[in-house]
Structure formats: C-alpha cells, structure tokens
Amino acid sequence: MRRAVYPGTFDPITNGHLDILRHVVGLFDEIIVGVLHNPAKHPLFTVDERVEFAREATQGYANVSVASFSGLLVDFCRARDASYIVRGVRNPADLQVEMQMAQMNESLYPEVHTLFVPASPALSFVSSSLVKDVASHGGSVRAFVSDVVNDALVRRFGQNGANAEG
Ligand code: PNS
Image 1 (spheres, rainbow, N blue to C red):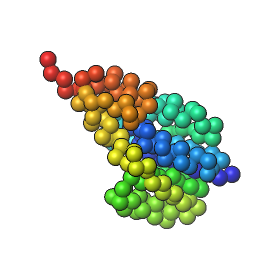
Image 2 (cartoon, rainbow, N blue to C red):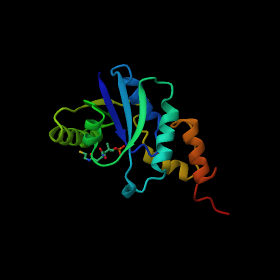
Image 3 (tube, rainbow, N blue to C red):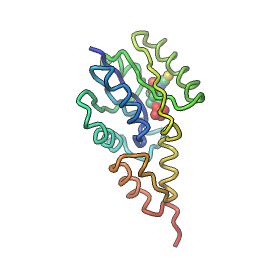
Image 4 (tube, rainbow, N blue to C red):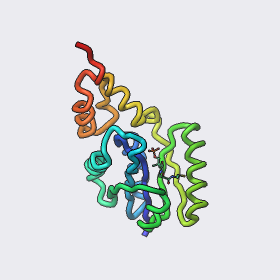
C-alpha cells in the first residue's frame, strides 16, 4: 500500500494546492490531505472549515481523504502508516525551506520520505496568504480558489473587502 500525506495549513486550500494533488494522485494508493490544527498561527478559517473546503475540493478523487492533525507531522505519518510526504515547491525560496523540513522529518522518522512537486508555472505565484490579502481588499480571487472557498472569502470580507469605507 503506497500511502502519502499531503500536509499544510490550507488556510484556505487554493487551486495551487489542487494542482499539486492532481500531479501525484495517480502515484499513490491513498493520499491523506493533512490539515494542520495550529491555533497559535491564528488562521482565518477554523480547522473544521479548512477540512470542509479541502473535502469539497477533492471529492472527485476516490483515493484522497482529508483529516486534521496537530503536533508533529511525522507522528501523523506514523499513525497513518504513510511513507511519503508530498510538498509543492513554487520557487527556490520554497525549496530551501522545504529541504530543511524534509531532512528534519526524515531524521525524526527515517521511514518517511518527502516528494517535492514543482508548481505549474501558471499557478506558481498563488499562495493562501496572497489570496486572503487580495480578497480582504475586495479583489477577485475566483481564478485561484474553488467556488466554495471564494464564497467563504466573500462572506468573510464582503464583496468590497474588509476595508471598504462608507
Ligand atoms: O502550508 P504550510 O503552512 O506551508 O504547511 C507547513 C506544515 C504544516 C507542513 C508544517 O508547518 C508542519 O509540518 N507542521 C507540523 C509540526 C511539525 O511537524 N514541525 C516540524 C517540521 S520539520
């Protein structure tokens, strides 16, 4: 059984994340999207909302499931008997950080290896942080997230963003 965890904060899940998933979905028998529950990071959406968005966006894949986790990623991988971690890489800065995390994870739990997946050029500038920033100022992020996430962002910030005056 080839099982992988695709971990992240997913605050919220974007088309960039889904593009990475699309590239690896055929490589594994099962992929668990692991949504980090870390209130100290003060995410915009609750962990339940982030899990729900990820479930909705991945419902077309029979071998993808979504679960939240807290604590160490390697402990989640061990508990789920996953031997691969999938991470998307958008640019050299990402790679630098991801290499360090992959090496730390592998030294904590040698049974797990990280698979880096390059982002598609058309989506390599998309991040959850930028999506939230644009939406908070009333910009359209329809091209970068699922309809469900877009609707949730519009509900959260309003059609004109959080800083609309008057
Ligand atoms: O989407 P993100 O925020 O880039 O994902 C980062 C994530 C969740 C993969 C990372 O912060 C993580 O694994 N956190 C769990 C705690 C942990 O295992 N820390 C040690 C990592 S080397």
